[in-house]
Length: 169
Image (cartoon, rainbow, N blue to C red; front, side, top):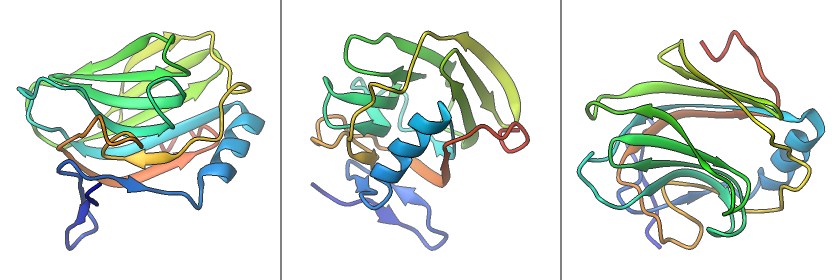
């Protein structure tokens, strides 16, 4: 697999590569399961909206079948899947262009809130749980297997095992 590129301001340019964060995976899993919540924030510059394959922006997953969470771009849509392959993709937002934006996701076992540039744009009721989440790789820019490359850019990534309503805005 190719690694991602880091520009001068630590902007992550995946360009088909991937970045893995093995030192935090077990701690993050334990913390999310204990708090029964998480928040995910990042600045995203989407890949070309015409690319016909779904690219995984962030995946806490070993494979398509074994996943805790997957944030993906499918053409002009951002999607989230919580849980394994049988889980439904949750549409988060539609992309109109390739301009950068701040995305924040706040998730508990029964509620998912989505923020774009500090404004709440969607709330989804869930019947999720984090108890069955497994010990999987945390990967940015692709799937751990390398079969879902994403061609965009990421900056300022933060994953918390709690929800801080002030920081999502």
